[in-house]
Image (cartoon, rainbow, N blue to C red; front, side, top):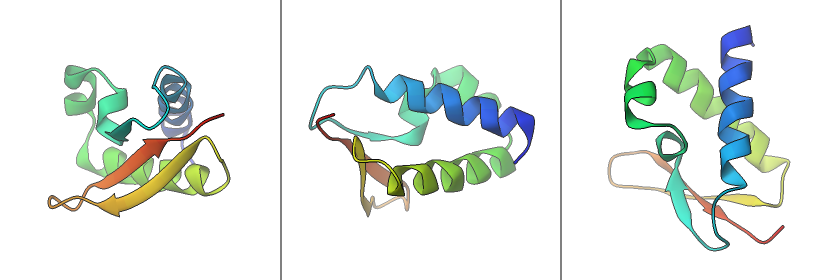
Length: 79
């Protein structure tokens, strides 16, 4: 994992702490719009895979079904 992706993953995970229990979100929701848009498509894909892998090991966030745009939807669970 590249240093930049590791840093972005850490930042995204930290942002999940600000969500309310039961709230659903997409990975891109954890970033300011312009910051997400500045990421290369390849970086977004890698970050998405890394975030999904991290969620599988945690109980505070759950992966739900993908939406109609094929984006992974997540839900904040109680900590």
